[in-house]
Length: 55
Image 1 (cartoon, rainbow, N blue to C red):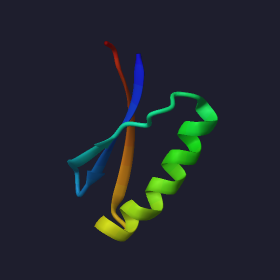
Image 2: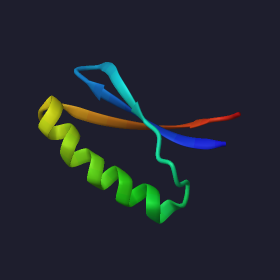
Image 3: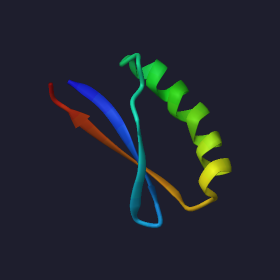
Image 4: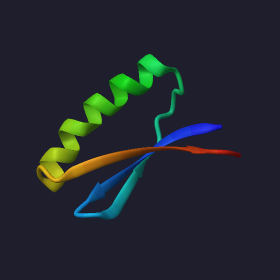
């Protein structure tokens, strides 16, 4: 089981973020750091959707 984040811009999936470490504190720090770069890359209309991938 792995938590991944889909990056939606204008209602379309642009990329998927896959944190390497699955600890909650590490995921939070990773998403917080990546969100700043995503806003710079895609603009203000960025939405992250969390989902679970089962292996």
